Image (cartoon, rainbow, N blue to C red):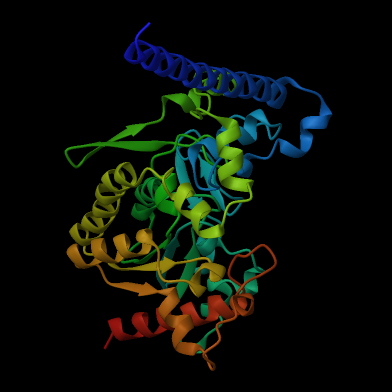
Amino acid sequence: MTHEHAECGQKSKFTCSILLILASMTFALLLSELVFRYLLFNGGSFMGPLRRAEFYANEWDLDFFKLRHFFGHKYIPPTDENLGWRNDRIDYVDGDYAHIDDKNLRGRTPVLLFGDSFAQCHTTEEECFQGILNKHPDFNKSYYLINYGVSGYGVDQVLLLYRSTIMRYRNPIVIIGIMNYDLDRNIMPVTWGLKPYFEASNGKLRLKNSHLFSYVDIFFRDNPPKINSYLWRLLVHEGPLPENIRLWMKSLEEDKQNIKEVSTPIIGSLADELKFNNIRHIFVLFEWPKRMVKAPDWRVNYLVDVFHKKKIDYIMARGAIINNQQSAQFNWSDYSVDDGHPNYFYNQLVSQQILSWVLELDQ
């Protein structure tokens, strides 16, 4: 055998060895994934500590909500066939929505606040926007705030609730509250419950709500989480990786393009319908207090851009809070309740901005 043939044979053996090692590693990884996945969904109680949706998906991702169902937080059928759900301050009788505070208007101008839990508040009613403003002497002589905020809502549900209630009121003022992560909810058929959502095509919206009339278990059976590797997701979300790398890898899971394509016509529809009906209105951009220690994320920048392009007046909660800071050190816990939602101080600062805007309308 010549030297060249021997060298060629050694290269072939080396290549085969590498390929064999790679094949073995691939098989081991696939087997590990299959075993882990089986145990995660079918194993005993020893897997309980690993059955947490936030270990495998961002808390604002569709797979997060699907995993909640499969991990034991079973969803119930929608309590409202049009909106998915509503709170106990909104009645629905004979196809008509009404707010229990409507009776308190007594000829005053209704100021309608729509939004999610940041509008509804996780404080007492007295420390929420209606409690603050409806007790303010400069406000309550001529105006009365009715809070249509519903915890867990996306802007899509806000649009539907607005359309279902606005005709009840004469010459109202409307405030649309948007928490930046509400945008992610706009493309989801389920968040804290099964909900309607929109699909967008060439800027046109199409309502999707047929799943609200199906059995909950059938919906989740036909729409399981779209996670290729639970072991990989566990590493990304809970593994010993540097924080900046984990945040970057988690950001790759976000469906930014789809969120923007759907959210833009939803916000546009709200603004256009308000303008068409000559309804005085303003948007309020909320953020989690703990996230204000960092620069605004892409959602906030996107919303500000949309507001500018649509010529929408808006209030930024971030601005109201930062402008109130007495020191250079921002302590987010000064503005939040225990679960991270805004507290009375946060709500009061935003209410002052709302009050100033409302009073300027009559000048």
